[in-house]
Length: 108
Image (cartoon, rainbow, N blue to C red; front, side):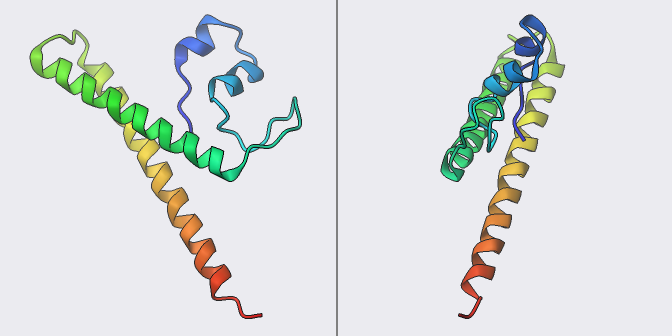
C-alpha cells in the first residue's frame, strides 16, 4: 500500500493516471503503457515510502516537542501512515519468505 499525498489528488487532475504517476512506479503494471516494473523496483519503492514516512514522523515529533507544531493531529496522521507502511512492508516480506521456503522445499 502506498500513501498518495492529498494535494496531488486535490490540486491537479484527479484521474487514475495522475494518481498512479504520484505513486512513483509503485504498481506492478501500468495499463496505459503496457510496461512492467520489476519486483525489485516495487520493493525498493515500498522501502523508500517507509523511510519517507518514518522521517516525516520524526520531524513531526521533534516539532511537537519544541512547540513548533500548531496542529498535533497532523503528527498523529503521519504516525498512522508510517505504521501502515511499515506493517505492509513486513507482511510483504513475510509472504516473500513463505513463498521462498515453499519453493525451496519442493522436490524435483
